[in-house]
Amino acid sequence: MKNLIIGLIFLFALSGCHQNLSAVNLKPEISKTSSQTMTNDKTEVNSEAVDTDGFLKGDSFSSQKETYVFLPELYSVSGEKRSDSGENTVLNSVHQSRSASFIKNKGNFSIYKSTVTRQSSLSTQTIDSARLYPVVLNPRTGQLAIVTGTIPIKLNNMEDADYIASEYGLTIIRKYAHLNTTFYSTTPGQDMIQVQDSLKSDARVSEVSIEVLETFNTAH
Image 1 (cartoon, rainbow, N blue to C red):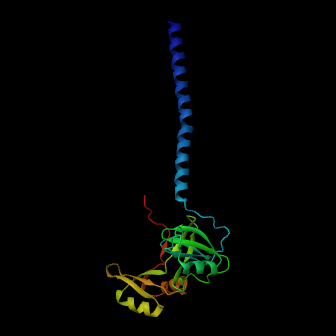
Image 2: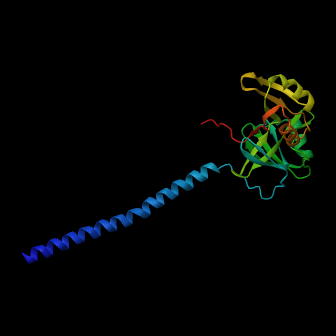
Image 3: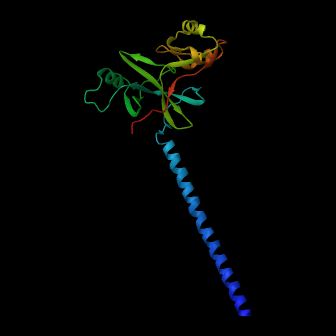
């Protein structure tokens, strides 16, 4: 009888040890899997990040709850297809005059870095028939983004929309009366950060931002 009890105790102890060992072996596997998932997600978020350490940094501004930094050496053009054999001759002339090097495509835009020209302000530019758009950096995401020259403004009273355009040298693109919002276009050379700062202190304005294109829908 005594031997039977000792045998049962031994088997019970052996079973408990096996369960503990299994639990110890499982924990690292779960931790490893979670770590891999988090790493992969982070890589996907920052897949378009660009090394901007060597870029000259300009003024910063806030728009749509994000902070952006102006990159004076960079500019972008819209609708240029670098794969075409016959590229736009006007744009070729612009790139050559700026000793520009191609950085990357971003949606329908192509981004360049000039080695001889720096923009003095966050503004669009027109050279011959080519429109150049400023480029900014989002420090949080590490991504480059395009500034379109459009300024959406939410007004306290839509009747002030035309007065705002006249007083600030803006052009009305479209009015959304049900949202009390008007989209304005700035003129080439007009400092958008300066315009935004002035509008923020205007009692007729409820909200104002600078339109920034950071993410683009891509075909799958």
